[in-house]
Length: 130
Image (cartoon, rainbow, N blue to C red; front, top):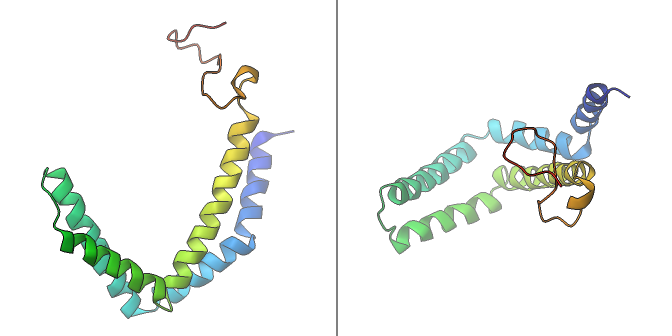
């Protein structure tokens, strides 16, 4: 069994999944809606403003958070951005499930508790092997 061949097969399955097809449909609609593009731009600007304040060590005003929440609500209700955000969330959920399955499958036997303290064999010299 070639791992890379199976990975390619997984990629093909993802590209043909209903979740990905819905995401690409929603993205196409979004791309052709100038009002939705403006809404996204305003949301990103509001997010950037808050991030810049945080980075500068300044406190954001309550109205800054209120504006971001208002724009979030508008995006969720918008006929272009709302379906895109929902489709993106579904596809990301699928990717998260796949990642969890892979993570669980490659854990060391004594790391199945989920504590992250497996013995590992990374050969970096920093870990004590049991």
